[in-house]
Image (cartoon, rainbow, N blue to C red; front, top):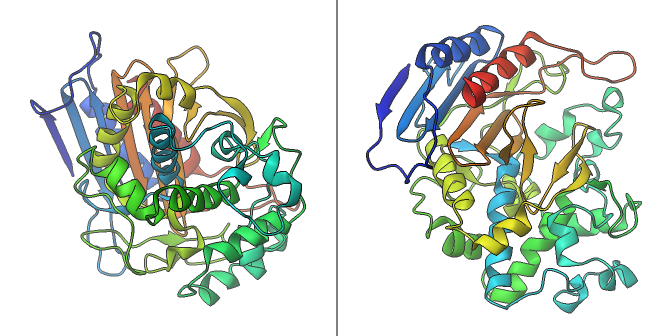
Length: 387
């Protein structure tokens, strides 16, 4: 399924844009489905050209097809929204990025680190705080030693209502990943749960309300919001989790209580809304130009897959060697994945959603092994980003 159009209502394009190869995008998304993803859908934009495509099924039982307008759990793409809300408060003089967290929050067990960890260190993952999620899911406690984990906790906690303070305590009391400010930093959801508490303390609203009022609504995102229950509202796909082939066949986790990540990674959106959001952000229309430059000041951070990447304030960079740089964020939830990127000059962007996660088998040492899906998705990303 595809939809090609020129969009007269699109954001003002930059002075120089390139054209989309609709046939290459059609072929690439079909190939990713054939490689093993049950269903995926995407939107690619270049100036006023828009390609929307989908391939495969949203439900393996009924064979209901995926469509490009479906809502989807976007995981840690949420972090760019959270970071934007923090930057808007900084612009308004309501918080200081380089102030210690202890100025705004009392965090049990943080001790003297409350005076050495700054707000900026939370946003760019250089606080040294550990990731809490293996401690919230007992069968994943061995993470990142993947071969010693099991997916049992996913079923046990499908409807568990976690308290954010309990999750923060798990991350704060776990062995530190490093000293505050050290690089490379460590990507950790503990940082962003602390930021949500900071948003609440400064504004008197819930973090979800703050992000909605200060980021989502001003951007005019009609299909983006935080879940109010364990199910995704509106047309959506089932989400199939394989946990490195330990769940065979992959199991549907589209109904899941997202309090285990809260406003750090629970947002629901569409590929169209994500492209609109990042276009506005990179145009300086979500935060001001000075704040945008702060967001694009990167430091090395060890990401969840073990690679070290360049991470800013809720943004990271991607791109092939010698090719144009893209800004954006990726995200995963149980069974679902999302990637949203925009070229540094704003002239081209893509957002893609998939309904399968962790499809790779592990070798004896616990390293994920290559799978045809990896190459097929890389080929789609290349077609979307570079033509």
